Length: 473
Image (cartoon, rainbow, N blue to C red; front, side, top):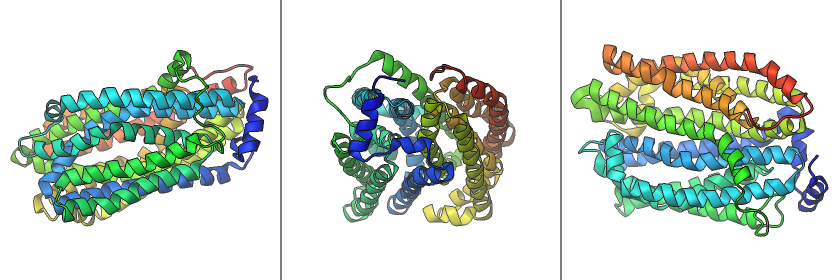
């Protein structure tokens, strides 16, 4: 047991935080306690993304939705470099808490804070300098480039605020404060929703107004999160006298964070392939098809974000009990997560198959865009029920500090299956081929994830019951 065991107990009792409950309370109650705030935060964020797109579609125009859709891969790429730090840091901090090592958990917070700022400065600057070239590579045309550029310029200027907010908010949840992490996410969204229509409709700032509201909302949450990690009431907090740059610790953080990082990078590439496939398949209606995909993407992310809320709630429970060597609780948490994830994605499938036009009309009254979106909803969501299972299993391996398995499942879903199918089916069946390639890749990835968990879990059980194990594959 680490030498800081006693100090961990003392700190926990002194601050009133109770991360040790992750190893003792019933799993069902813990999932409610940790997942419900994450789900609420994810729902609010997803609803904001939808409402924001509605504001842009109604206040700026249908082509602005297409321009916004062009920014999705770049935003995924920018967020990927934040997730690389925050996801690895939250997993490592949970494992350290399970090992009763408060000092190492503190060092993790310090290192995550520093590297979020470094990543923000480097990535934000590079993307800003080469913004037009990047957007054109992602599928921007002469009609959509101005909208995409106006939106991303503001977002990139606020990158340091976004990175620190996202990075430390994940750590807040992982170190035993799920409700406070929920509040910060809701605070960001509420400020955003209040300001966006004011900036778009009242001030006439257009799509820049939506982006400005986003950054101001994140600034308010940034202040909330920093106040938490500077407070002595927090069990794990920023401490100036502790280590701020540990190559060994950062190596582990990057190793675990590589899975969600690659997942976001793959999502970026996949959207590029989808945009270009739609431009080729739809011809003169290419921009309209991209706008339709933007509507489908926003709707899809609503359900996926809820599933991510489940996995965020599972992560500290899995990490803590893996660190404590309690396989029974690890397996029980996984089982509950899989059933909940499957239920959410099945609900999304049913809703989008039955109500495609109603969903599309919330964003725009453009007839051609609604028609293409209808076809996309009904084709793509056929394979959606297994998406929840695949996401839960992928994040399960990440939470146990097994990045190679998580990366494998991420890459197979988004690259090994989807990209070849986009190329093949898109050429054979046009726009329909693009939609069906997405559905088929989800089905194949879900089956692969199930097979992987059935193969790996007996081996993980033997590993966790052995005398020594680590967060390395």
